[in-house]
Length: 108
Image 1 (cartoon, rainbow, N blue to C red):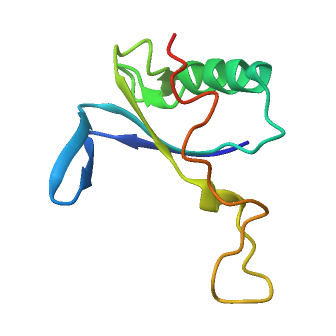
Image 2 (spheres, one colour):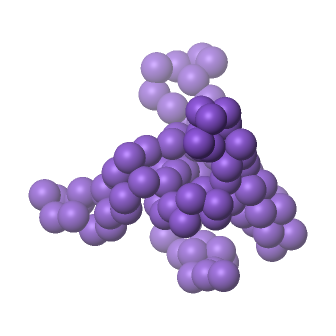
């Protein structure tokens, strides 16, 4: 499992010119899940993401998590995080993206 985490003041996902999801201040997370990833991996990474102290406190020190600021989290599936571009300019993945992931409907 791989994730790219970005602090944002706002973020949205637009598909076919229609907004599908939007958040205010918080985290935009591009996440790539592989077949070998388990529910325990999801739990571990989820806890890590929401507890990362990457937001500034009143002194400007990065000491607050997205939970501490009551921020939002927008997860975007990004299977190409596992792609290889070593031998080609077209990303190759070990397996095609699955339209249905066992973790897709997981919500805590």
